[in-house]
Image (cartoon, rainbow over all chains, first blue to last red; front, side, top):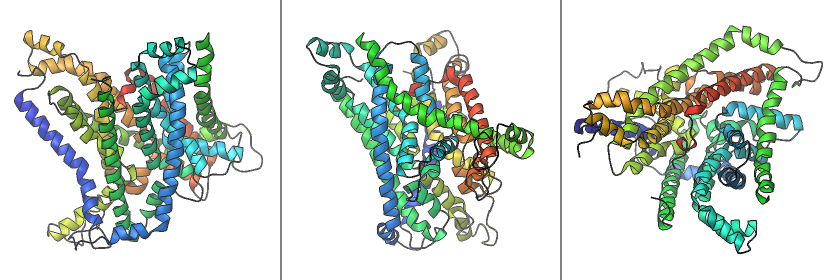
Length: 271
Length: 286
């Protein structure tokens, strides 16, 4: 069928343009990859030889490993918090009919639009006013706020897809609210819960702006990176870490998306 | 009955969390901006002085306009670039559209700082581009192209690079839900593809375009990380000014709070203006 939206040549031009943009998007990442194996203290041409030295340096760097650990801890606590609050809000938004639902949903999603610099400062002032010391917990508190909307956006459409009569059947058979949730709703929304968890985890793990105002003495990975970027001598090993993190996060993202699609297809609920 | 009791118990905790850790802090910023609370002990009380000095200061307002211009240019350019990409993926009938979309979006889901780092490595005086030019003899090592890094250009390039994948998504969503029968009808009635595009597709996809613009313009307007890493003095943005008022050796929380609240008000107004174009599924790859 000759298409109404695109001529053959049009499609060819757009395909070429798409390819150029993808090259533009991935070339810088490729540059990091190449220079992470380059045997020179400064990333510059000409390339001077292959080495795994920088990866070794990174593995031996205890500060860096500690920062990765701090970030992982914050990201796990954040995702658990965001998923719990997200499931509660999504059940209300997707299942209940109540006055002020539009307003409630707007309030719950409003952290999506706040500039992070402003939010970081606002929380800093709150904790200053309350006399709470800064540390990993204060970062977790902030990260839960900014990741909650993402959790809700992933969970609500999923809960809406589930037939409410399944839960009603459970009640008719004498199950409590909690029991019905645990044995009917939760298993059905599990793929979405996992995506919400992953989105919250990766967002928190990567978040610099809010964390920079709220962290105490032990830096997160992005904060460590940011300060390392100011010392050229550390650049090559930072590049090595960059490559590891980029490859891991790309793999997780692609695997999560593929896994979700397979899981949902197997249940025969989607497309 | 059961339902009525349950809704507050479901929403109570999330709304309380946001109340304490999101809305109350913004109120505190407002209180600081009127100097009712202050970083320094000593006499202070309600005053408009902070607001008056900011609104009369050429420095802050000028910086704000500069940031608006930079974000505006970046947002418009990448929306224009992303439109044909989304159009291709949504309407060309390619079977692999979701895979191609994921390929486009994947960089956005990786580390933000590391993507900035990549450009720092590429653009520096002794960076990849310049040393490549020296090495190939296209340029003498004494005269690197030094405007590449630490410039307004660098900030806009990196911001565009970072947000481009994200922008394609809302446009893709509206184009994908477009009823193709409308295009067939236009074609049957003798409209050329261009005419059908201008009269049908483009107007129907404008909500997605508006949403895409909004989702880039708002975060880049308050941006401070990219300008502080690749902007130098000429790429300094409004967000950097806010950070410096809070973090330097000479903090001025009152002025900083005025600037922060001003930004919240601007973003709030933009959100209300754009709200009819915003749909939840535009920011998730569902």
